[in-house]
Length: 380
Image (cartoon, rainbow, N blue to C red; front, side, top):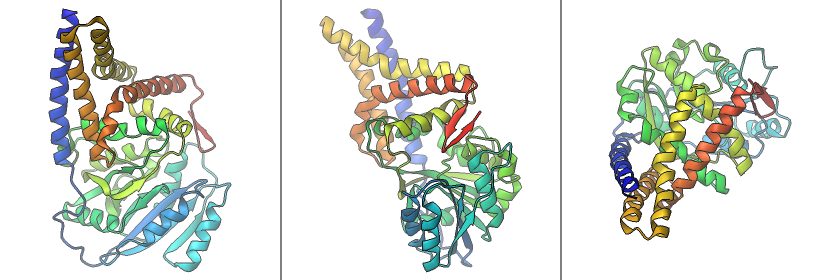
């Protein structure tokens, strides 16, 4: 019991350090448009939306884009229909009839060696006329000031890329457990000030649902053709931007956009399983560190707390409970920064367990040779 109590005290010290790190990151994460000057010259912004079977999303997405406050810029919207089998293309055509800023770009057959989204984004950028490209997913809902404020930030900070995490809408139980872990991972493991200040591509993070590129920065990377076989295209482009010497900004988009990435627990499982092991660089060492680290910091305190309660050891229960509450507090602050209720932090042990299970499943799927299936395509 004494050894377990000492272990819990040690874990509490680590969690206090992590809490301080998270609080520093929260303070460092900039809000788009804050202290940025008005945009001069009304530049043309090309909003580029790749879609594949997005009939449940595309109308609302376009309505929000077209309702943007465009007093400081001009707007064109191009939608690339990547072989949709539903009514996606028809919906876009109907909207384009009533608003000439919208164009539908019929897709072509996916060439060998390309991932679907990379090819769609490449085609969109090749057709765009703007000096700024906003790559936007169909499940994002922009608030009126979103484009204006991120463009102000990009220009004032001379950034080649501005990206961030919209406020996540969650409903199913697995959404509530897993989706908020995106913000948690960024705030707990990435020194956010280094994203903009360091030229190293090690300090990069991006969300492919919202990526605002300066045209010249995008072209310098070699475009999406240079990363055509990448599953994590957002991270690959972020690193490419930094390698080309351009500044990138990771911003807080929770007051500028919202999205619901997945609409069921099954979609959550499939979506994260295809990305998690790839996000670890297919490294079994990083996978092992994730499993051991999350087990020790977020699962073991709960187990030891229950052991202390059952054994009647007040000291053990208190030390384990302290570590448990610290982990929950870190998660709650992360969720709150992401626009979700602080009380979701109480789910930290379950969220950590789900993340571990997804990481292991993702690694097994990736190493099996079967690859990953997404939107009717299989990628190895």
